[in-house]
Picture 1: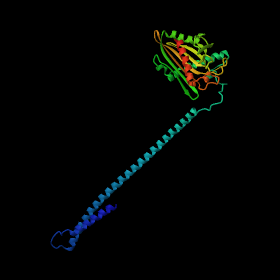
Picture 2: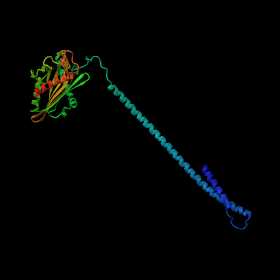
Picture 3: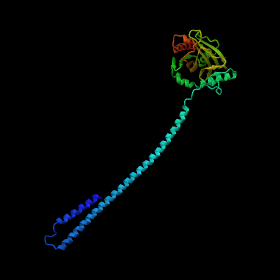
Picture 4: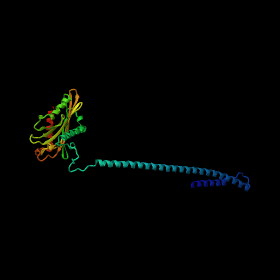
Length: 347
């Protein structure tokens, strides 16, 4: 508004100066009153022109003010909309965060490590879950089949963990490693055998099921019990020097005959009320399977995978205590003897 006033004053000053400096309409003397009338008319015309200019400036300013008002109103509306959107987004993020907190709390409860008890409760625990065979014949048979059937259901996990199905024919490996207070054992073997898969499967089964099967002086197999046509309970004792056994395995073994393969599953029993473990031996905790699968009319693929663990510290009475070898090296030597002997029996 101050700029408009200055512009108006400038125009008035210019009009007055022009009226003073303008030449007379005629060189002849003019009556004083007539000259005043002419000057008055000129000034009125100038005033009218200035008024037109002032109106134009006023209208322009009004348009600017109006436009300015719409602009700020638009800005205010945009800010209000942005504020509302931010409020909605904050509410959504809050709900997501609350859901994440709820999920994290649930996972924490599920994954929280339970305190280890001094003794495992056995009153409401089934025998087979403890891999224990009771003395009662009915319960003993039930526990035997449940233990091996459970191992059979878990074969896919063993296959994936060992990678046995990715190994080519001729593969043979034996691995020993230490993990805290345990010695881990891993054995794999893949061989193509001439003959139908049922005959090859029967040959494998006879190694475990035939009483008095020939073995080496380092390995001894004894049939402790039978559970039907396809179930056998075998005691395996292993020694390094053909004297006192160093390792002791109580194997529950069961045969499964399928459409194109025979699967023999083995799982160690950890507690047998009828056959307690003798003192001074390493007790193995093992899972194993042998698969005889048809790959042709007269050709069978034989795959063997064994996974187990033994205590890293043998009992004081164990002969391994008197060996010059490290315990893991002694176990490797002992397991290799067993592996080689069983490979010969399977062949």
